Length: 149
Image (cartoon, rainbow, N blue to C red; front, side):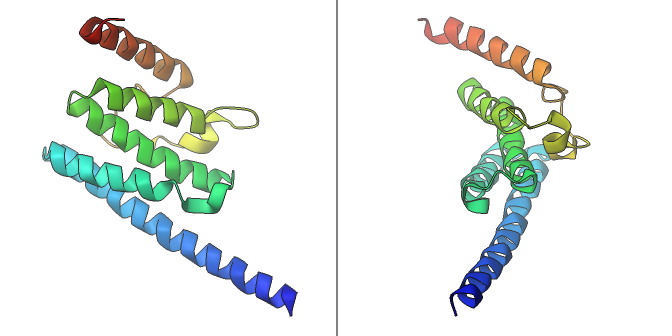
């Protein structure tokens, strides 16, 4: 029966997304822990893995749950890039985070929540869209100074 088959495929996809979200959370948490040590190279590997795996979660779904998971991966990547003096990586991660946490029909708090996805070491740059835009502007100016036009 076609309806049963679709139902089974949907259930498998939900289970797959749950497993993937746990894997992403594991990498994200490990990246924050490595950053605290500090083990910048290890944190970068873990953050990169969280970001890569988060690209496939939800298969393009716009559900808030998936946005939060993706935002968490981008937040840790921004922090790791900042700690590793990688303004390009930080800027890209922050732009991605800003895109996930804003837009039509999306409220900042619904994606960022209580701020826990930003990590315990958060410096406040991702506490609001305005703070993020200001940080992105700072990074663009820094890159302009480093590399010119």
